Amino acid sequence: MTNMNQTVARETADQATPVVAVEASKPAHGSVEEGKTVGKPFSDKAKFKLRDVEVFYGENRAIKNISLDIARNEVIAFIGPSGCGKSTFLRCLNRMNDSIDSCRVTGSLMLDDIDIYDPKRDVVELRARVGMVFQKPNPFPKSIYENVAYGPRIHGLANRKADLDEIVENSLRKAGLWDEVKDRLDATATGMSGGQQQRLCIARAIAVSPEVVLMDEPCSALDPIATAKVEELIAELSESYTIVIVTHSMQQAARVSHRTAYFHLGNLVEVNETSKVFTSPEHELTESYITGRFG
Ligand SMILES: Nc1ncnc2c1ncn2[C@@H]1O[C@H](COP(=O)(O)OP(=O)(O)O)[C@@H](O)[C@H]1O
Ligand SMILES: [Mg+2]
Image 1 (cartoon, rainbow, N blue to C red):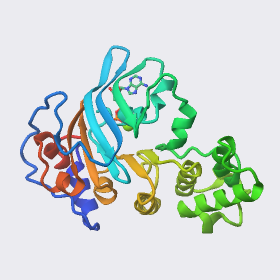
Image 2: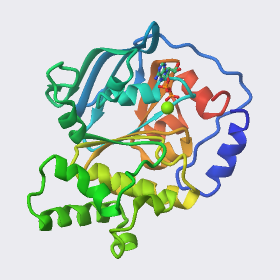
Image 3: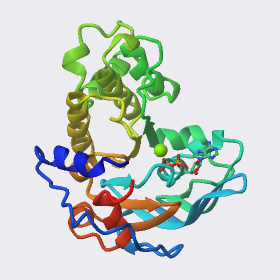
């Protein structure tokens, strides 16, 4: 990204948490020692305990010996240059990589006290606990109601129509969408605006009462107003869920997350409180990235 400095300057003008540009004239420097993450990658309130995680696509090692805790009820942002492994690592958390034939995951990945990669693990049940929202809103070509009711129905969370109605309403309320759609629950979801579709996908993810919601660049297809709504929603959801968000927008990471994890070429370089990462990063590579020397 050659115009990152410009972008940072423009986007910081109207936001509360400034992304500080430390002297932007130095060239990118610093190197990373594999398996060594600076800052605070561990937590005493771990929801996920991830140790020595490596991910391979065939021969290509896309994630290199990463250890990280993700804390209960935190919002943690994954940032770093394109191709550094953010999505790959995120997808390990609910075994979304299983669908990629060449992909192999090693190391220890625990969710509370369960081993995510236990071959006997029921992946459908795992994904009910660890839901996912994708970059491009992907509602089913069905009604708004059916999009939200689908998960609770297949997981047997509601026996009676009235219970299902209640879950649908609560999920849409939590996703900040109820008032906009309550009079047209039978309308087809694909006719909604992009921002509404993404909030519907969030409603669909939370309808099965997950403990964790993974979001992979959830706003990159949205306009600024829809983005602001989703960011507001993330703040509210963090009271009930653990949220892991991949974002290419440092401003977004600064606005929504408690901790930020900086990835570089498959390594986890630094994890710290978000305010620290954006004002006084510990690692030179993090500093180079946030000041726009590369991206
Ligand atoms: N489905 C896939 N098959 C093979 N290689 C992949 C696949 N997805 C990602 N990779 C490779 O893994 C590395 C990390 O990619 P990715 O996790 O998508 O990075 P990011 O999300 O940070 O942009 C890249 O080298 C990419 O080419
Ligand atoms: Mg990605």
